[in-house]
Length: 193
Image (cartoon, rainbow, N blue to C red; front, side, top):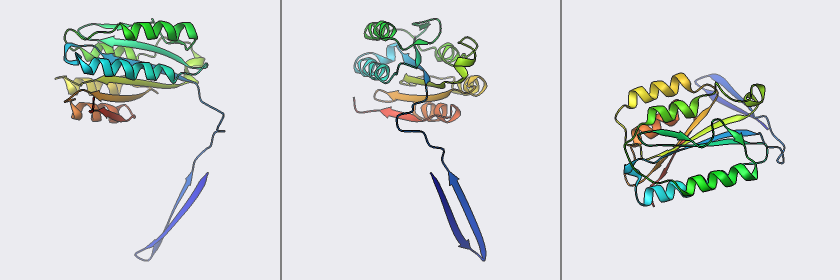
């Protein structure tokens, strides 16, 4: 698709050409989806239930050419798989069981979770670069070391995109918006639990 815009302003003509490469409607780019969920104590109750539901819906979006991983964090970080795995029926079923078993408890240590989610040093070589890499970070954003986290995102992002999802009654909006901005992604709030 293409568009051309012209404006005459203060005796000068200005043009803007916009060219958008198209994909066939049936064509879909393969992706690597890393779902990160905060399981700290501040997420207890309805927040963790809603976050689990959001993760389960995220798993439903995976196609046969996609790869994925699920990472949970509180005072410790734990990834379901050592690296992103193919979105096969068995792997998705295993991820669904894992997500349903997540509970909120403990402190909040986001830095190791961000490091694990943005780590692209492992992977499957050339195949990994052909995929759109998306990191979806679901948290209430209860952190105090925002500047260090923004630095980590800036320095570790690579070709990934970071999307933040604020959940709960009072997510740290500043952190969530800025993390998404540094991550070249978007911020979504789930405020009506």
